[in-house]
Image (cartoon, rainbow, N blue to C red; front, top):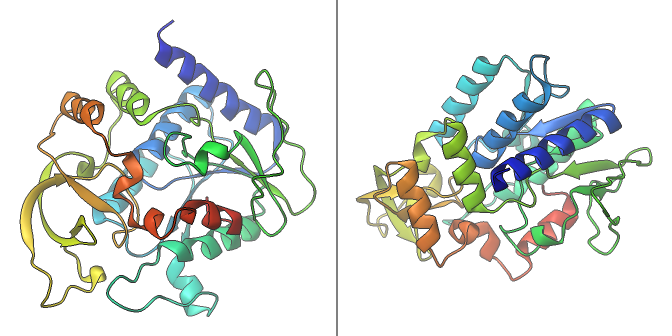
Length: 296
C-alpha cells in the first residue's frame, strides 16, 4: 500500500467510529482544503448512503467570496445538508463585541457562534480538519478530543489513545472534537488532492490580486481591512496556503498555477502553513488560549 492509502484508511476508520459512537455528530466545514478533503473521505466512508452528519460552516461575514461560492457549489454537488452559523447574528444579539481599529478581526468571535451552534443543534461530536503539523497547540490534541460542558479544552486532561482505540464516552453537555487527518502533513494533503483529483477554490492557486502589505504580510485589499490613505495597494501574483477570515489570512507570493507547482513550493518552503495566519501571532500561546475557550 502507498502511504496515502494508509492515511486514507485511518481517516475513514475514524469517520466510521464517529458514526458508530455518537448520536448527533457534525462535520465542520470551512471551505478550505482540509475540510474539503474530509468531505471526500466521508464520501468514501459512507457512499452510496447519505452522510450520517450535516456540514456546519461558521461564517464570519468576512470570508473570501471564492470560498463561499465553492462551499455552495460543493454542497449542491454532494447533496448533503449544510448548517450555517453567522457571526453577525452573535454581534447583533450582543453576545460578542466587534473589534475596532485598523487591525480589527472577527476571527476570534467565531468561538461564541460555534458553541451556540453546537448547543442549538445538540451536536455531541464535531469533525474537523485540524492537523498536528499546523501549530504546536494542535500537536497536543488527541484524535478524539473531549470538550467540557462549556465547550472548553483542557490539554492536561486528555484520554490515552492506544492502538487506535478511541473512547467517545462523554457526560451530558460535553462534546468531542474529532480530527481524522490529525496525522497528515500539509504535503500529504496536497499529494492526496492531486491523486484523488479533488476540486478546490481558486484562491489556492496563483492569481493576480490587489493586496496591501500589513504587519509583514500581503493581505487582500478588501474594505473589511479598513484600508486608508497609508495603505499602498499593489496588484501581485499571489495565492493562499490557508483559508480563513480575510482580516487575518495573508497571501504568499507565488506563480504556482498547477498542483505540481504548489507541491514543489511547499517542499521548498521554510515557513509553516499557518505562518500566514496573523491570528496565531498575537502571542506564543495564541492558538492554545483560543482552543481552551472553545475555538476549534
